[in-house]
Amino acid sequence: MSLPPSQFYSLDPDVKAPTLKRLRTLSRILDKAITIPGTGIGVGLDPILGLIPAGGDFLGVLLSAYIILESARLGASKATLGRMTVNIILDALIGVVPVIGDFFDFAWKANVHNINLLEEHLKFPSQKKRADTWFVFVLLGVLLLLAIGLVTFSVVITRFIWGLFTGS
Image (cartoon, rainbow, N blue to C red):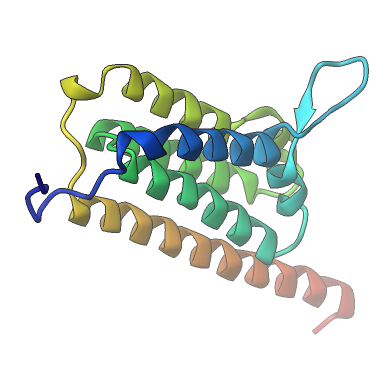
């Protein structure tokens, strides 16, 4: 039985477990791959990427957007995908602020929160309607525009700081 054209397609149940495992692994790599000895605090690739001017935040948003895309394929609802997108937007917007954003990136684990939201949805998938294709495309478009905006902001700030040092 096929889904109506307005529904974003969902993966076969046999494919969901490996997909969820892959998303958990990606989330762990992005948010808490390495535990700081004696603290129990995990540091992942996302806060490290955030230290790279311009491109780091862009890559972080794109990798996080992949989790949303796969969550939609797993049948996540609009509400779940919306909350996941807000987590990424919050992470990206605060993360771009120099110094404060770097500390925030180490503390806020948006991808781990998003996997928890997905797992919660998957416990009771029949209670919530899947997101349609256009909703998913809009969310991904918003995240792409956010990523482009972060690069633009980083370039403008870098040029401003460079101008302060060089006097031009």
